[in-house]
Length: 279
Image 1 (tube, rainbow, N blue to C red):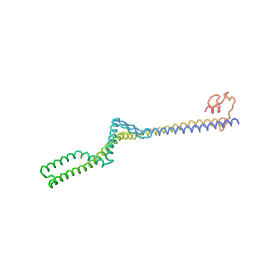
Image 2: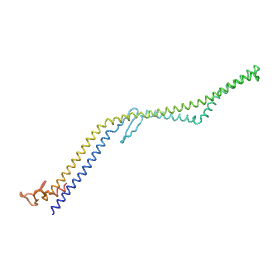
Image 3: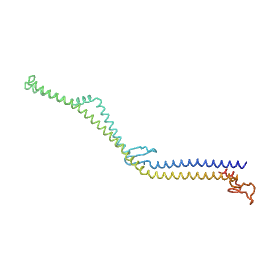
Image 4: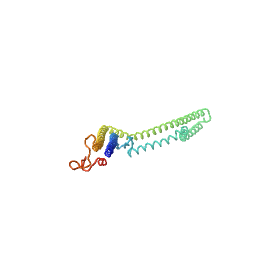
């Protein structure tokens, strides 16, 4: 009965050892396959690129970060500063074009009105010297002068409105030009990003092949590990058969054998139980 119990224990140890081996082999294979996948991913990632224009860097997920060189960044800031200034000038005009036109008109009239007043005084002096002041002939000449001066003022007002619209268009164009310049500068490192992506694509086939080698090596290593554990488990089971005499036609004798020595399976004094404990 003791021998049967020992056989059961040895058999259970063999099965447990094989189960442990299967678990460890599966974990080792999973880790190896993950390492192979990580290798393929890392080898196919875009490369960081830098140059006189700036830099293009990529994180572990392939997201790009673009940056201008200090010199180009200063130029971009100058564009944006100019755009802000022109936008401020535009706001002062575009908010009330009529008021702006009136200001321009008054500024021009400040120069025109004194000249017109002098022209009227000179006409009055001429009419007086000719005895025509207050007469029909003098009135006609005075009316013609007034009409001419009125046309000048009207043209000046129209010109002021046109100047306002012209300035609005000019400021808008300046703002658009500044913003466009800033955007174009900001996109310069995109060329580096495209180069980095192309490098990653070029190296991807080699990375994939290397990943296949790593995957195969991991699978072979896990199979080898499983084989060793299976062999050890089978060895324990064979010890069970040896102890019980199952299928051998031989019963183990605890006393000295025919030649005065104890029969064992791997060294003097080693019993199946001792071997199971060592495994």
